Structures are given as structure tokens and as C-alpha cells.
Image 1 (cartoon, rainbow, N blue to C red):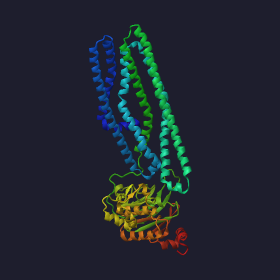
Image 2: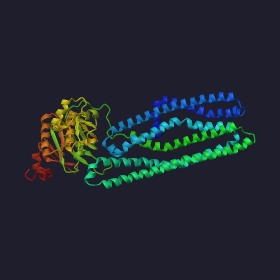
Image 3: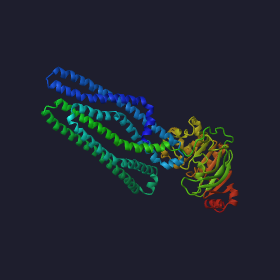
Image 4: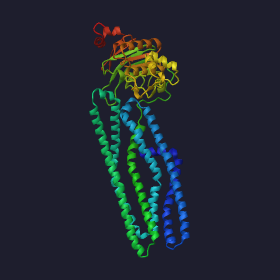
Length: 575
């Protein structure tokens, strides 16, 4: 997966990569050439007291060094530009793919894991692309070229290379092999700590209300400690690698000096040649170390690439129909025919045998006990989930045959848990329709019974809203969410228990305003309070995922035992 991912995204920047290869190649050649020049200065200049030769060769070495620096800087710039672009592209594609997921895929991966995959995991792949581009040419050239140049300088000492290089490789394989499973566990533990942190931040009010701070702190501490232990194990292996490499390098250098000194005394090797050989030994070791460093990064990046690839390869369960219907024959109509829905992995359906219709401008209410499937049912209408049996027809077209964008444009959804985005009141309302004027926003707020509290805010429509709307009350949040759906100007409005945080007076005024101001809009209302839906054109009663009754309030009160029990529990026997 790592190779496939890098090839897919790096191929768009092949010219940058070509520049990296050329300039890194030039930089590596310059690096390999410098020890030979240094040997010539010692052997031909210092040993023979030829000052002119020293100045000429030294000046040439300076030019080569400057060229090496320039080539290295340019190659690093090209590599950084390509790697950062790859990271940007991967993050954009992951975000785009996640945006197209249904609730099923989001639940399958988990929000915390998706965030980690689009941040930390992409960063690991991006870092490998950066380091790989800069070291891809340098490391093998330094290692292989260093061996060739060292052998040319002194064949007699080459046996030291034959001992030290395999020793380095053996150490690298042993240490890196132990790090691979730790990297995989580390990424999963990052998911866990993100999940715990997200839950605690989202449910901070519940945590405080039940005085669970010590327990939540302990849960976070346990997860954090596990991550620390894994990081310490990885770090221990990481810090062990380089000291062992340096030990082998230093032992090799000592061997070169020892045996090289014997060769010099015997007159077989010149001093400059010995110095050059030592430099080539260092370059060989550096090439092997760089290769080992790359080999150490590859397993972690491979784990991250696999996790990113899982998201990119995941297909949404909501398959978008090519050339889907955009011109609807019966705007505002909603028809469910023998609908059945089963969650993935569930043994039995959550909904079965659901059949009812809502015509344009009508109000259809859905009631039932907790767990009856009311919220699940309304998520099938905007096609957040696909039915597993039967059909849902919106605007006269099966939702599976409709163009998704056109379908969503015709529906305004107020979810059970209204969510507001960081910004202002106006920016949150215009989330429903960007071109809406201030008059449109005030009108929507007036219908949603939110105009009064927005006018009391310091900056009115431009008042700040924090993430999730935590700086406004639950009732205000619900009314802003309702106003946002109204600004959208849909043909169908779905309220998923959206009046629960409102007092009875505000609830009544809001319903009256909706019926009065939006008579042509079809309204589907999920409600716990019977008083909120008594005036509905039809009321659908659910019990255990099946429809046990449909009719007006009076009809159901007279003929449906389940509905009568709900009414009596809330309004009394004489309701």
C-alpha cells in the first residue's frame, strides 16, 4: 500500500523528483570527490612542500564544496515541495472521501480514528516522501561509491569494509524488525487516546454533572500511559541504533589507523591515502546509516499508509447514481412503502413493514417509545442510510435513483442533536443558503422563535458562536438549527425531536409560525411530547420497529392502544 500510495501521488510531481535526483546525484559525486582531492593535497602538496599545488587544489576543493552545498540545498527544496504537496493532496482526498461517507462508514472507522488518519498518518507518509526523496540517491551513492573509491585508494585495508558493513546491516535488521509491530500498536493507541479525549470534551457536562472527573482522568491516564510505554520502547530501540552504529564506525576507524599505520611504516601506503580511506569509511558508514534510517521509517509509514489507504479505498454504502433524477415529478411528497432497515451486523431489522405517505404541505408526525426506531426512520428519507427492504420515494422518485445533491437540496433536516459551527450566528444560518440576505435570516429566526435572543446578543447576527454552539443554551441551539433549516428553503422539513429543549409556550408559538409561514412545505416531525403533534394531519405510531397505527389524534386516541397509553402517560386519562 505504501508504494502504491506514493506512486499515485508523487507521479504528479515527477519533474520535481527528477530535479531532486539530478541535484542529489551531483551533490553525492562532489562528496565522493572531495577525499581524493584532500589526499592529493597531502601526498603531492604537503609531503613535497609544494605551496602552489596546495593553493590550487585547495581552491578547487572550495569550489567543489560550494557546488555540493548548492546542489544539496536545491535538491532539498525540490524534495520538500514535492513531499508537502503530496501531504496536502492526500489530506484533501481523505477529507473528500470521508465527506461522502454515510453514517455507516463513519461509525465503522470512528471519528477519532478518521482524524488520526488524516493528520498523524498522513504526516508519516509525507515525512517518508521527504526523507526518501533526499536520501534515495545520496545513501546508495555514498555507500556503493564510497566502497569503490576506498578500494581504489587501498585494496589491502578493504577487508575492514567487508567486516563493518555487514555488522551494520545485521544490527539494523535486528532493531528495525522489533520496531515494526511497535509502530502498528502506536498508531492504534493514538486512535484510542484521540477517542478518549474526544469523548471527554464532548461529554464534559455529563462528566461534571455526575462527578466523574477522577474516573475519566484515570481512563485518560491509563490510555496515555500505554502510549507513553509504547513510545518509550520505540525510543529505546531508536536511541540504541545510532550508538551501536557509532561504535562500529569508531572501531572501524581505529582498525584503519592501526593497520594503516603498519602499511605506512612498511612504505606501502601514503599518509594522504590513509586519510582519504578513513573519509571514505565514514561516507560508507553514513550511507549505511542513512539507509537504515530510511528502513526504520518505512515500517511506520507503511502502517500509516495502510490506514490511509483503508479510508481512500472504502466505498460509501450510499452509491451515487450516475445521471440521477434532478427534475422531480411530485415536489414535497414523501412515500414509504414496506420499508425495512437492518444495521450492519445486526441479527434482526430495526424497522420493518413501514408504509405511509406525506403529501405536499402536510404535517406527518412520528411517535413511539424510546428505541422504537423513530430517528432511524427519518434518516432514511434524506438517504443518510439506504433501506434494506422496500422503498422510500421523495418528490416522486426513489431516493436511490435521485441525484443526491438535488435530493439534499429539497430537504431541510434538524437533527436530534443540533450542531453549530465555529463562526457567527449569520454564518451558521447561511450554512443553509449562502446567498441568503439579512432579511431572510431575521425572517427565519422569527419563525424559529429565535429573533428575540439574537437581538439581545452584543453583535446581533454577527455575534460569535463557539464550536458546537457551546456558548448558547440548548433551546437556543435548537432554534438556531431550525432557523438554519428554514433558510435552506426546502420543500420538505424534517424535525427529529427538535422541540425537546423548548418550553411549552415557545414550542406552541414555533409550531404555529411554521404552519402559518410555510404552508406549502411538507413537515415530518419526530416528537416525544404529544402536545407538539396533536394537530398533525397524520400521526404514525411505532412500536418495536413496526408501525402499529396511523391516523389523526382523535382517530388514534379512539382506536390505538399504544397511542392512547402514550397520551395518557403525558396528558392524563381524559386527554
